[in-house]
Image 1 (cartoon, helix red, strand yellow):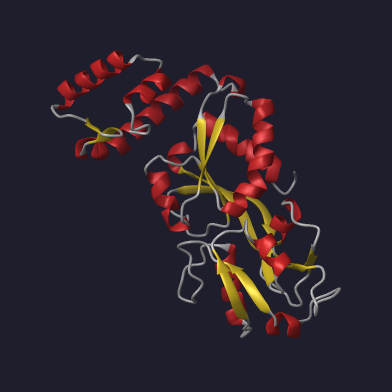
Image 2 (image 1 turned 120 degrees about the vertical axis):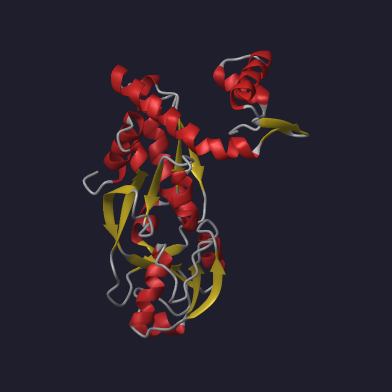
Length: 295
């Protein structure tokens, strides 16, 4: 189901294509129905397979956890692919340092970054499609564990030769200038929406203080921000950790905001089913050691 292809799935399991076909035939006999059908680009799961998948994933994870508990967990021998939910900002901030640490401690471990809308995070965990999430994610509540990594606030990013903003930013300048806003997909900033990101948190705060400004440009991704700011007179308000820990162009400058802003917490989250999983527990420890406040 993960690979959509019999040969690729067999390669992962160390089985030939005939052996895989034989295994599928045995499963068809056990269940009384076909679990996969051939389509032009590979194999497609039937409705029965889709309905069985969550229970099968749970069973596999339970078995793996039991075996790891018995044998002990050795990161250098682990070949697991961890699936981590991150925003595009999170990918830039966390993945380089994480991959360097994994190269030292667990050279066979792989990572798949999942760029889903925040509203889809819970479902991804429930279906066993995610091992960990990192970010400001207040919508992940029941059924999840969480661990605080650090607290952060906001700063303003603007080009160094901005014609009106020099060494510091005043409140009147902040209100009168035009702004660039990162608006994550699925996270509208209207006042009725859930505070699912640092962007919505800041916008809700401004609204509560009756502070209004012109949003001249809204973009869904952080990666374009530097290029746009260098070519325009726009301002962008961003989490300070992001600005301090991601490379940005020499032509930009970071300025303190001219008013108090709310702090927010960055945490790592995992589903209850992964709480005692030794591989997941090890990964959480790595994340804490890299990005926790004491790091």
